[in-house]
Each structure stands twice: as structure tokens, then as C-alpha cells.
Amino acid sequence: MQLPKSVSVFAPAKINLTLHVAGQRADGYHLLDSIVAFADVGDDLFIQIGNTVSVTTEGPEAAAVPADMNNLVLQVARLFKDMPGASFLLTKRLPVSSGIGGGSADAAAAFRGLMTFWSGGEVAAELYEPHRTPMSKALLKLGADIPMCLLSQAARIGGIGEEISPLPGMPPIDAVLVNPRRAVSTPAVFGAMQERSNPAMAQTLPSFAGFNDFVLWLAGQRNDMQSAAIALEPSIATVLTALQSDESCRLARMSGSGATCFGLYQGADAAKAAADTLQLNHPDWWVVATKIGSQTARALPRVR
Image 1: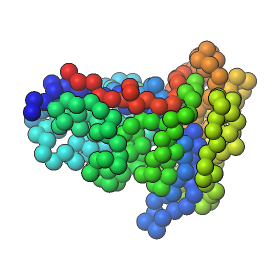
Image 2 (image 1 turned 60 degrees about the vertical axis):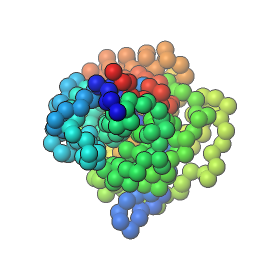
Image 3 (image 1 turned 60 degrees about the horizontal axis):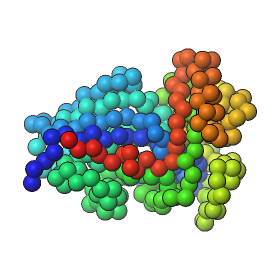
């Protein structure tokens, strides 16, 4: 079998539109009920087969990325025990420790890219479906967000992250992502939570006629980690206030364990105008206008 010369993979940001913490297992893992979507902004991973396994990082957020085995890309590479070696070039655009799954998205991209190599360059979403890969348990152990990032598809997430129910009917939404340049520790936020057994979402989700119906329903849901994260990092509240001050913002909420927050808008023009204003008023923040939904097609590896 002839291997491809190289593979390029897009790693989109993961956004928790809702995040209900519904319990905690005896082993410490938290039980989640979450709606996730993926943005058209993210990192890029370029892979070539080499003699050793190595990663080089570039891009505006590269300085914060670990170069040792704490890097999830390298940990994923180690799962491919028969691989002679791989050289990774990671272009890092997403802030680290920011609640949008940057490290997990990169790990999932590495897995998609390496699977494409070892399938002789075949590019098919079926290769990366979590329930199809014998490495699914190992990937979940590396990071609970990794399985949901494999297909980068809008979905309802349950369990500790391994229960993935696609939401093909979720409409694409224009959004603004904002991070105050503050890294937040997920374990610290979980530790600061007052209540870890909160109500889950309804067992059956309603049907949505469009943007307005969906946002109205989202407004009645929660991110159960938001209050604890704000207590640890008050700048999150400042970001939410800034988003909510724009009357065109239909909903503002924190993603994941923070500190990134999102605002939802009806139309790309409104989102771009809001992002421009936020960046002008807060030049030290990370601000980007984006469209969120499913990014499965764009996240498929590109073979050379």
C-alpha cells in the first residue's frame, strides 16, 4: 500500500451551546448533557511520515502550546504503535485552556490524519466515527472532548463525552467568540462548583423551525459551570456584559469551562459588526466572528 506524501487537517473550535452537569461518577468523572456545535475557525495540522514523532507549532497562539508529551497530538500519535514516525506542523489559532476544545480538536485532527495515512489515503467520515474505531476508549481517556471532535458535527453529548447523538437539523448560526486572554483550569472550575447534580435537558429535544425557535429554546438552558468559572475568573462576567450590551446579540453564554464566551446573532453582518466593535473597545481580547454548526466536511483530511 502506497502512503500519501502528506495530509492536512482542519481542527475546528468546539462550542458548548448548553452544558448541564447532571452528576458525578464514583471515579470522579462528571456526567454531562450538552449541545455542541463547531465553528468555521480553528487550527490546522499538517502531517508527514518521518523517522521520529515530533511536533512543531506556529501561529498566533503557538507560545502556549506544550512541546513535550503533554501535547495531545503527540499522545494520539503514540496510539499508532506500528507507525514509523510522523512530523506534525500545528498552526495554532485557538487560545489554549479556553473552553472551546482547542487541544481536543487538535488531537482529533491528528487521529483523522493518521487514520487517513494508514488507510492508504482514503478520506471518509466513516473512518472517524467514534463507535467504529477500536481506539475510542483510549481517545476518551486522553480527553473527554476528543470523541465529539472526531466528526466535528453538531450533536447532543451525554455520559462523560462518549454518548454522541448528531443533530442534523440544527441550523447554522452566526456567532462571535470572545476570550479575555485568561486561561481557566477545567478541574479548578469543577472543584469550585456548588452543585454537581443538576437537571438534564428534556429527554426528547423539540423540533426547531429556524434560528428564532432555536435561540429561544437555548435561552431556557444553562451552562452549569459558568457561575463557578466567573468566581475564579471575573473577566468572564465582563465579556458576557460586553456581548449583552449589543442589542443585536440574541444570546450570550460561556462555552465549556471558560473563559471563552459566545454571542449569537441573526446574520453574518450583525456578527461581524459586533466583533469589530468588541475588538475596538477591547484590543487585548481574542475576538472572532464565525458561523457555528457542523464542520464535518471541512474537517475531512486533505491528501497530497
